[in-house]
Length: 238
Image (cartoon, rainbow, N blue to C red; front, side, top):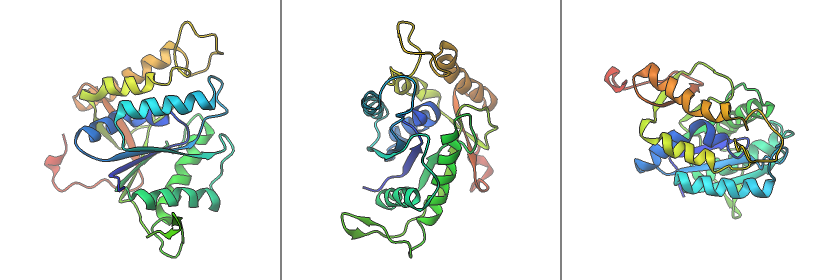
């Protein structure tokens, strides 16, 4: 299956928190989108890996993505080395995405910055034909995505461009809420974390609202880039 977009995140819920409005919009426009989680989030304070597995499946249904896979890297301890790069390269060549969305280049959680660089390096290396990978024992063709965009996470990084998600904010919030174990629940007996507060849950919507305000729409999601963003016409800009 060829995808138009492959969204890659260090943990289940990275995608939903950061770029799910964009994904929902592109799915509605007929694009094929997939999600690749690098870890199961097994070091998370709340919930269990098994619970998060099911939550990820539920969120994928909310977003309508074509596929979701997990590479089972070690949460907190994966590195940017050949083994991990090849695992991601195999998925990039399998799905041949035109665009890859990946973790913020720097963030509060150390896995986010690591995953950002790891994914970016794998996207480049995936285009080198002398690197050999296999899918069902078949040699894969080299494939390099046309674009790698980094979504924004905990830190308020200045975006290089933003996407209008005004019609999809409710889908975004529903995909986040699918992770019941992780986020605000006044009746939960689990330990509190920085992302389990009501303030954090509220911030997901008001951050999107603020980015939307800046471009004159209701809600938006922001991204940073590795190279210049180009348009065919200045009228392509809203």
